[in-house]
Length: 382
Image (cartoon, rainbow, N blue to C red; front, side, top):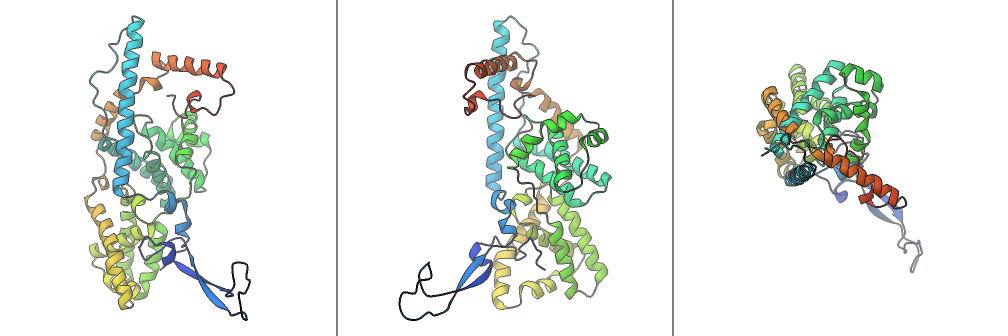
């Protein structure tokens, strides 16, 4: 069953493959002028995009797996290089002033991309538990998780601790999904200073490119559940399939599936997996919905089925589908604290030197606001 915002055929539909509208015109030029003879009515087929294909999620937040790997690797390498350089500069400044460098970390074991993903997975599940405690709909929790995942595509935990970002994403998700909670109540419940939550809010919004609407697989999954009732004789088993599919969607949140596939594709894949687990005849529904004729059956086999199988493989093999052990997360967090950039530490000589340089630059060149080298970047201070 097609939902309002999803394309349930499972393909990355190009504009020419979507819905069409018929426009009645003449055989004249663009201004409607007839070149010769009398007017003859002709029909022009204009492709219309599916609603989901017009969303920011479809147009700005879809990647191939290699792209995601490259983005994360680049950010990680740049930050590690920056921290190394800043530690050397901090050491030189202390030596010049005759101060001790004994407290500066030596031979740091920097966090890898895998370490970062593991730590993020731990805090993503913290989000799930907190929203479950609040008894809010799953899509509100999922929005907070996706905000956090998007943020750390362009940032690293060595610059912004995931706990701080987690709280800001949760607060933002409650606002964007219309489950408002005042910052005072929010900070009181989570026992975190309101200032630290609000401090990151604009940086998070900017990283999200102010794209706040998130499309999740929950709604199309409900649509498939209703649609499958047309071909089922065992409603109790179908209900179990649907409930299991919802749990699989929750698990999918902790993988990269939200960047790789459309929500309807993920929803259909989870219904297919759940059907196998519950011994439900999914192929009967597939034949009813996607194999009405030879052309449709061929399209299902060649285009949609490989996508469903790829999603199933991720849900079976991705290590992030398993909850992160707290001891593992604690060990990574300890190393993270050692990797703190002195340029973000207000007590470091490097931080104070750069602040003095920024202040002097503002005094000498007040009119040069457009120069990025003269501005303090958002989130640069600790």
